[in-house]
Length: 281
Ligand SMILES: Nc1ncnc2c1ncn2[C@@H]1O[C@H](COP(=O)(O)OP(=O)(O)OP(=O)(O)O)[C@@H](O)[C@H]1O
Image (cartoon, rainbow, N blue to C red; front, side, top):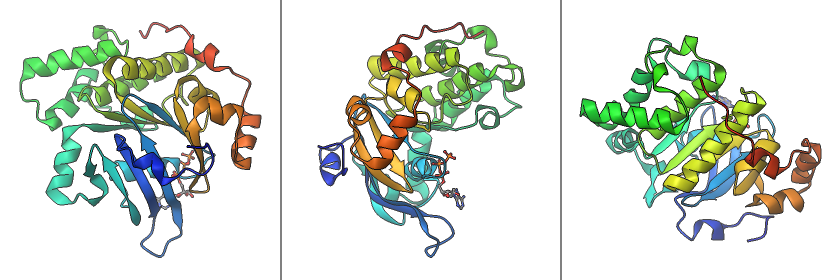
């Protein structure tokens, strides 16, 4: 597929997630659409980045995939199920399964201040129906280990964690249900350079060791360049370009993408990927 003009071929090969000509708007059927006929495919063990300026519709796309806003037209298929058509009990069951997880934009507000790290991370498992307490504790410990957080933080409340630690707790909470697809909305925007490198590397490790697919939303092109296999460029609610990250960065076909690339700091993919992890405590 060419980088320009994302086409329906991308969704014919039954990827893990297929967003097929999806239009979304707020304020009822007469409000202007903020996402127009969006097409996107995420395959197994692939990191796909969504890039676009503020207000371009990135979060709306993620919210549509997670069922938080209804689609006006088009369909969203996840692992063979048309999730945009699920209603009521079926939709609740799908959500509870934790197969598709969404880590929100703001790590401070997304964590309940009244829950310890252990309670926060364990909550997702309890919701997913993992009743056995010992199993829950083991899975919580595994998830914390996976994101590089020491077990000593299990009993801490979010108010006593750094921004980087909170972001990792959020990731641990999303990972604990072993999702097939993880959607991260601006996972590194609140972090300093060292923590940013660590979180991006975590996402890459997750893909490589557990074949988890990740959809990463960011307005920061260098961050995406360091971790994504493919990127989709959103401009005014439309996917204007989509393709392998190197191709899109080195040979942008859409004028808007070309402007984004030209404006990005000259950070090289290799530099980001070799950023060494920093201790979390
Ligand atoms: N709940 C809502 N009700 C009405 N309009 C909304 C709502 N949420 C978002 N919008 C509008 O939809 C458009 C897309 O917003 P969205 O949050 O998806 O953009 P974004 O690309 O994620 O932006 P940012 O990078 O600033 O997070 C914007 O014009 C925004 O004002």
